[in-house]
Length: 391
Image (cartoon, rainbow, N blue to C red; front, side):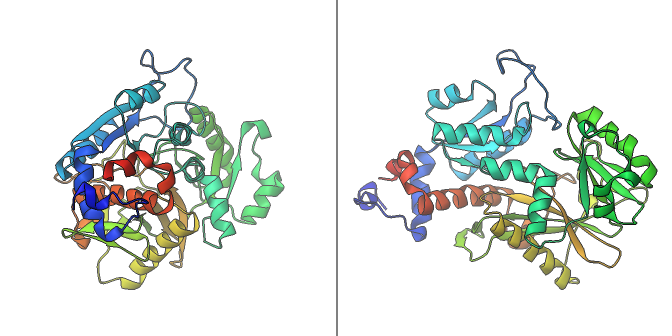
């Protein structure tokens, strides 16, 4: 295809020509992969405040995503920190599309800050919109949405010191949520990453102290939920366009993959933070054909969440079963690790790609192509700068 052949007026997007569009975009599209800026670095913020969500730069993974994009064929890829200089950097480098690989810099609800900024700038991006970013990252808000959709989640309540000292047996909300249940419980931050500050609490008497500990660490609300003693699973899900075995497909359902049982060690009640224990291949068991019904149930659950929440980018759904084997959604990770797999060290998302004939680079291309397909199908009028590259 030549530029002349697609420069019809008005120009109409055709998914069947996506490979040819990408051939044009490889040479022209300017992509910024954005990682978390450091508020301690001079010039990154005006005033340093607090981030209740444990901060991480994700710079290494941003470079791995950037390298994958270059290997795929894109000629203009930049890795840029997420801080107050971001708008000027995007303008100076004439960026057309941003890949968000940041959890934010500081402040409350930091995951939604950068997508909100990009919305204001008119800059298209690969990532969740501000509302979905914040909803997914705030576990209590996400769980309330699950309840409204009739999707099972572990019974829970929240607590903040501004509400006083938690006295479970004297609190009506606690009785309404848990009834006569006396434990065990899981206490965690409402917003967090990598299973940090997540505690197993054997008996009700330990809740007040643990909730206080979570607040001391995060200066934020704590979530208390019923402990589920069954197996723990996760499943990744992204959009409708995939690239596998050298070809693009546009599927009728979101692409759910990497159905994994998270392997707990004998002393673990809950999964240990990846910051303390790396995600190795023996920490996740890829589910095989010997358990087709359970695997399909996880896939359908992930697809339902992606569709019901109108998501537009990758998430990882974390699920736990009760003593009877019923599945309960714990949370959805809005920025799952996209580490490039290495020998015996991988990410939970990448672990199951081979089952679908996909490589890490295929996943990266799938995520980018799905976002372009969505923008060109649903919002072509707001991305003239990308359309013009194709004309």
